[in-house]
Length: 135
Length: 135
DNA sequence: CTAAATGCAAAACCTTTGCCTCAAA
DNA sequence: TTTGAGGCAAAGGTTTTGCATTTAG
Image 1 (cartoon, rainbow over the protein chains, first blue to last red):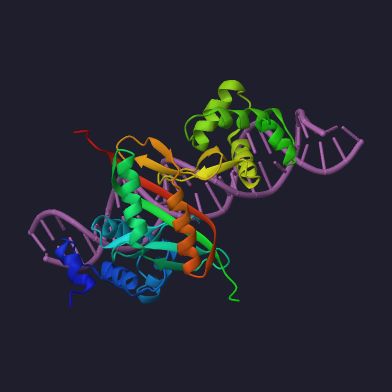
Image 2: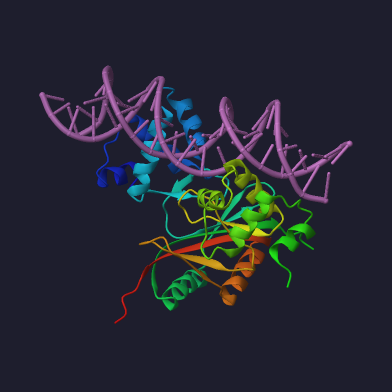
């Protein structure tokens, strides 16, 4: 079992106490915390960690493709562990983020870009929805 | 021919000189200007317009569904005239924004949301691509 | 005339950075 | 030991806001 710390070492990252805390925190989060949330959770564990370190660390982890930035339109960068393509559906009534993967959608994006004369190198998709009443 | 000013009046907006300038400027823009660009273009026409008025006006126009915000990941809000569903493909090499509409994609988004138990009330999609060499 | 809009400057946010100190390898 | 990392506080960039003044309707 290759854990997240090993992956950081493989990526050539120096593992400091602060980094370990931040990384494990994102690893174990089951939501999509923004930087301030990560900060507040981190100082619960070690209250000497600074906001600047959070920013520097997430930016590093993102470059190493270990975490991914998620932007859901609230003006704040949120992060999640990188674990392959998936998209987000945001519940507009409570902000809950639901993940999904849809192969057909992935293909379609590639095809659209190709038809327009581009190689697809990235994308961003968020759906905003409201829960349907079951009937 | 219902022009953009008429639409503003229908929406109940008071038409000031500043608003007229800002609105017509966005109406006639063939790119996706950010707030600062709108500001610079506006003061070329009337140098008493303030940045605050640009922000207040675009926010008003957006609420009235007369313009739409486009976020292409550069951290700045860009605006375009509301003119029905379409998506954006950003050329990562030069920032050019290409628009497209793809019916199949629209349907697919609706279907995905529905299958997840949601009514789709909005979405955001940007593709990032690099021009293919013709061969 | 009167409510609403503007200008200006200050403040509010989120994020980045300089610099000196501290710690991982 | 040495180079990179962290803490702190200041600065940066975008957007919002308070308040006195002006203006559209």
